[in-house]
Image (cartoon, rainbow, N blue to C red; front, side):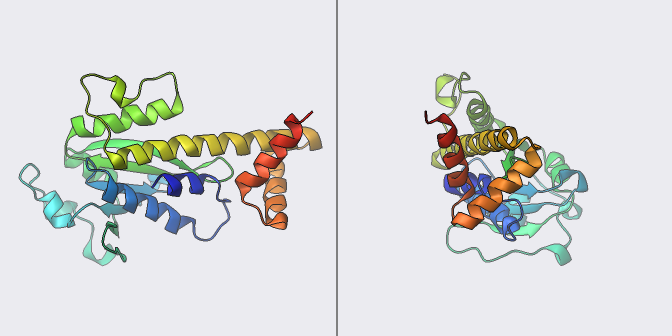
Length: 230
C-alpha cells in the first residue's frame, strides 16, 4: 500500500490508468487496515460519486450487531460493480452519496488526499470504521506525516498503536508528500530558469521524463541535483 500511494504521487496526471490506481489504494486500505471497514475514493467528492472498497461482505458489514442498517442506504444494485479481488484484496462497488451514508451509519471517517504528478489533489481517500478509538491513530499518523514535529500515535500513551496496514498507509503518505515536494521544487526551478509559469514548467518536466524514459520523480530529482551541484 505504501508503494501504491507513493507511486501515484509521481504518476503523470494524463496517464489513462489513474482510476485503477486510485481503486487499488482503496482496496489495499480496506484489506490491510484492521480499523477500516470501508475505504472510498472520489476524484470529485462534491459530485457524490465514490468507488468504495469493503473489508468484508457489504451486507454483513452494515447489518452487524452495532449497526442495523436500512436497505435504502445501500448502493442501488444496478450500480454495484464489485471487481476481481483475489485472496487478500477487498471488493469494490460504485456507491453514490457514500459519505452521507457513512455518516448516517455513525462511522468514524478519516480523510486523506491522494496526489498525482502535478502535485494536484487527484482524489480524496475516506477511511471509515465502526470504532472511533481504533481509527484515531490514522488521523494522528496522517497529521504527523504532514508535520514531522507532531507526535506519531506511538507518542500518545492513551492511544492504540497503528497496525501494519495503518503504518503502511502513513509511510506511503509521508513518501507521497516527499515525492510531491521534489517534483514541485523541480517545477519551480524550471519555471525560474525558463521564465515561465509553473504549468508550462510541469509540462516541460513531463516531456523530459517521457523523452528520456524516466519516471517523473527521476526527472525531477535530476533537475534538482543539477541546480544544487556546484
